[in-house]
Structures are given as structure tokens and as C-alpha cells.
Image (cartoon, rainbow, N blue to C red; front, side, top):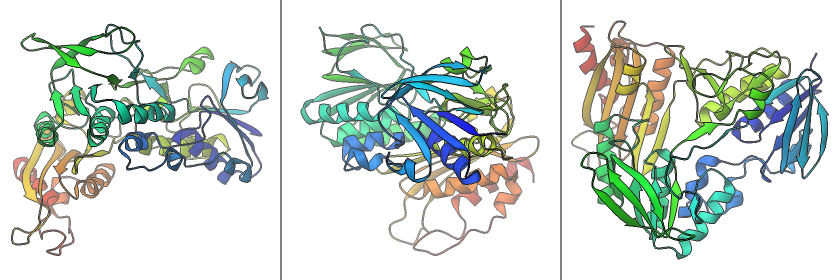
Amino acid sequence: MVNNIAIIGVGAAGATAALQARKFNREVAITIFNTEPYSQYSRCGLPYTISGKVREFDDLVLMPPSNWDSVKIDAKLNTTVTEIDHKNRTLKYNGAEEGELKYDALIFATGARNANPPIKDLDKERVYGLRTLDDAKVLAKEAENAKKAVIIGGGLVGMEAAEAFYERGLDVTVVEFLPHCLLAMVDPDMAKIVEDHCREHGLKILTNTAAQEITGDKTPKAVIVKNRENEEVTEIPADFVVVATGVRAITDLADYIGVEIGPSHGIKTDERMMTNLENVYACGDCAENVEFITRKPMAGGLGTIAVRQARVAGINAAGGEATFPGIVGAKVTKLFDMEIASTGFTADMAKRFEIPVVKGSIKGSTKPPYYVGGKDIKVKTYYNKETGKLVGGQLVGLEDAAMRLNVLTIGIQHGIDAAALFDFENCYAPAICDTWDPLVTSADAARRRLKM
């Protein structure tokens, strides 16, 4: 019987796990720990505090500290769990509070930390990550006085940060090691559409380029970069630098007590979000689960995945029975009014997971051709060549990409094939969408290739 639940971490995963455990079990004692002084806040909203699209930092706080008492959850903020004795089911903590706690069930929601690349003098002042609320506060101050910023990393966080600083009037350069930005999300041809769009709006983007050194005394003067194709070396002036080259799961405590760490370097979990240790669970950015289609190990790294895993972990820790279906990986962002959306496999992911695919790719419009105001949209859908089932999709356009992506995600989860997506009866009104939605048209292109 579970009488006491301890949850380490109060991000999206930890907070959701606590609330779901409480909802399921009104009597169990729940204690949550967070090394930061803040209660749950939206990490995905951090770049928008810099641009001003989020007016106040406190607006990102989703669960004010005072609210925990109302649901009978003991929130120990600015407090770090320092030691776990799992044999005796106790943990020690210090910080704002110090003490020892006995638990019956334990949930790791420890998140991830920035994974910094091997760049010389990365430890200078005014070189930042963008992972915490404190990071965002410092960077918002930088935007008030600085003139030139260099962003190392062209993934989601890097590109969103670059847009934010540009909108504050800074001269911004993005340095991306890979041949294109956002390649964890979209194929190269889709990435090029995004890059061209961002450049048209004034962003400087250097792809296939390695940041090698940050020059200057205590603070940056410039970033030395090298083109990986022609080996040309360039010096980019910088008042400050943001490093956004990915994250690594925080697993130290879990590893110490014998929790198994998976090949993605996250805490390995089953469909109940339980680890190899009984009544020890993990969820969110620190956890590894499985990719939805192949059932191969995969890290989540998305807020939407974190809260769904946390719901399962919280219910099960409190004595329930819930399961997590696996990670599809639906992602979306918006850069200079362009929506970029992706779900399931990209072409590169399909190759790595050894899934042969057929593509349906079209350039369409969000409105009928006769209606004024339609926007161009490029759509790709991918299907398993052997089964015809939908396994991935990407959309890039100035409107309505995200909602179409949700259709593809549920299609993947329910195993529809190209013929079924072609038969999809989409709604129609000239002011909103065409009689044949671009999703349906892309499915038709693949259906004919598959001879379905």
C-alpha cells in the first residue's frame, strides 16, 4: 500500500504527476522537491519573455506556490534532494529546508540540463543557456543594452531565441553545425523554406558551420566559426552568446540507486512509466520510453509528452493502473509568422529506424484558388512502403499548419493508411479551406505510388 509519494522535480512532468496522483488518491501524502525557487512554469514560453509576447515573467508560472497547500501537496522549493537510500525508502534534502523523508513510491521528474559543445572559452561571462526562468531574466536584460547576439544551435530553442532577440532590435546570427536548421524536426527541403523565410526577415543564419572559439577577455568579443564545407574561418562580433545545442537527461540520483539508464541516456521506463525498480517511476525530459511505431527506445523532450507520461506515473504511483502509448513526437513552432509542424518520422528518422517509406508531397494553398488571401503551404506525408500506414508528416506555411498536424498525429496513433487519409472527409468553406484539403491531396499522391 502506498502512503507517501516523493516527486523530484516540479516542472511540467513533476507538477502534473503530483496533481494526477492527488486526483486519483485523496489520502496519500505527496511531497515535491524543486532545486529552483520557482513552482511549475512554462519552459517553452521562455523565448517569448525576451520578445515581450509574454508580458511578465510571473505570467509563465502555471502553479503558484500557494496553490499546493490547497490540494494538500507539500512543495519544497529551492530544495535539493541530495541522497536516496532506496533500500530503506528514505531520502535526504537540503536548501531552503533540510531533512529526511520516508517514501513508498518515488517519481523522478528531474528534467534535463544543457549539453554544451566542445567550444573554446565557453565559460566566459555573458555566455548563456536558455533553460530556466533565471536564464530568461538575464537574457531579457541583455536585450535592453546589447547590439549583437550570436546563437549557437539552430534547433527549436535556438531559432525561437534568435527571433526574440531580432524582434528586440538586435543584430542576430545563428550558427548551426548541421547542413540545415531544425533537422530534428523537418527534412532539408522544408528546413530551407524556413531558413529563406527567416533570412528575408533579417536573421543571419550560417549552416554547416562549427563554432570553435569565443574570443574576448572576460566577456565575448566575437565567435570564431569554421565552414565545414570549404573550411573558411570567420569571426562574428558578439556582445553575448546563447548556446542552444540540445540537452541531456538528469539521471544522477536515479543511476546512484540502481535505476537502469537506456541507450538515449534517459531513465528507462515501461508502459506504466515504471523503472526496473518497483514503485520507482520517471517521466518528462529525464525519461526514456519507446517510439510509437517501432517500439524502439526514444527520449521525449517535449512538454506534451512530459505531461502525458506524468499523468501515467502519478496515477500508478498512487495505486492506479494507467499506461503510456509511446512517443509519436508532434512538434510545432512559429518563426516570423511561419508555422513549422512535424509529427512521426522525418526521412532521416525513417532511415535510422529502418522503415522503408513512400512520400506524398504537395505544394498547396490554405484556401481555394479563387478566394483572396490564401497562403502557400507545403505538405509531406510519409507511409510505410510495406503496409501503407501513415508514419510521419510535415507542414510549413503561414497559416493552419498546426491544426492539420494534429490530424496526422491521430492518424498515426490509429494506424490509418494512405487510402484512409485520402478518404478523410475534411470540412469546407471558401473563407477557411478548400474542398480537397492539402493533407488529402498529399495522401492521394502517396496512395497512387503505393497502388492502393
